[in-house]
Length: 219
Image 1: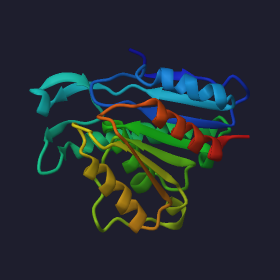
Image 2: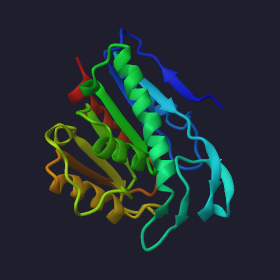
Image 3: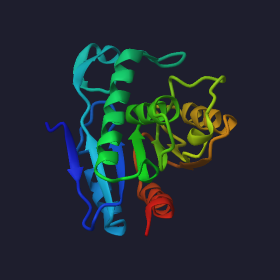
Image 4: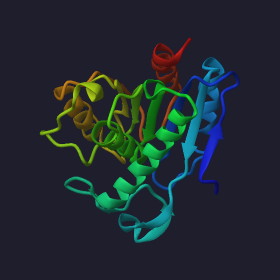
């Protein structure tokens, strides 16, 4: 398994989307979606990193690709926060690599599905010291946010699009809505979309993501 999947832009790259997969998946999981989006966004590079393989407590200690261990499911997710911080540092390294290649951070989008979404929310709003082009939070939650979340002006300028299924059986929609609402209360630019789906991605959602990305990264 590669450390990351690099989908270079068909044209000269002037923007980048860094997209994290969910628990138990791999860096190829969102390759078809990224390629479909890239057809309409030919100057956007996509970086799809691979989570390390490690034991996951809630899955009987079975080793699988995971951005962090989940030790309990309720009343809220109990997680290994140091492993989440490690994953966040990986994302920051990718941002810095893109900045070194000439991509301004305000044209870098962090995207993540489920557990990957928790990592990008944590990174964008608690760890990255500056503004980003935006955050795509798919079927996810924010285990490190609470009602005391505060954002400085640069982080407030990082827009958030939260997308969730009303029938999500893995990450309850209320968990996604809570993450969205906490960013909103902290002064963030937020948008919420929900779909009649479970813990998955549907075509309507991909079209909404394309529209949102086009408004921020299109020429």
